[in-house]
Image (cartoon, rainbow, N blue to C red; front, side, top):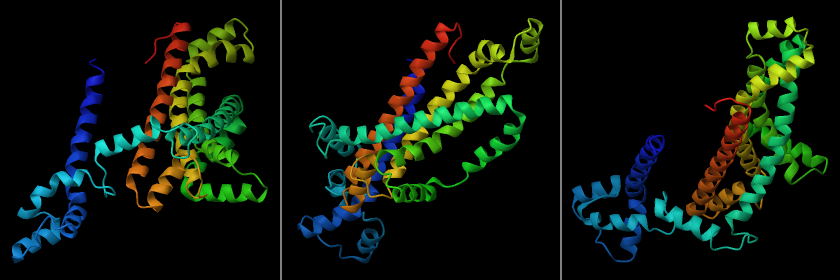
Length: 306
């Protein structure tokens, strides 16, 4: 419970700031709508007009504050509106419906998992090569670092267009972008883990005439497991971001990115925010799964999880 207190405190602070920000963000729209409906009188004095035009707040408009939390198309949705939209599109829709966030979540998640598997496999192979081959260490590692300086928003459309020229569409281009974002944390983490055994441990293996492969399987690989799981948790989150980013420039019809596009194109922020929070919850669930796997694995290995 004590470990949850800081997290809950931060979440509560964010919610308070969010709730307070709804009023100034939506007051102008609320006041305009109220004037059209004849609910308020147009300010007459210069002071009232100045307050109305500047902040959308005046003595006459203070009674409109509750209405800022119930706009159909607000600039900033209130927390309860986002929660209501998520409840409707997750719990009250058929999972095969195009309006269901479960359906869109599976589309994004499938690309995320495929891309993460590709990126993780590539990252682990590169890490082993970097540790055991100095030429790869001097050549591949700098390129791996340099690859992460390219903005993914610029790279994603290029990858999708190039793969589309060869008739490759759908899941695979998104998976490639997810793999691009997820392989680097795995490379760095596993390289660090494989190099974590100290000199005394390596000397002990040489004393027993252990081969290079025995040193890898008996010492280096087990020592890299905590670093590897830390990289997995970063990589799976990056892979999810990559899948969503890949859906944005293509006008995808399904996925969290597609829902965000629909919300922006049709001026419905509730759809965008619901998809955004659903993506965040999905990422948190994936990280929690890897955290549980990490604790179970390290416990079976006789190591304490951090």
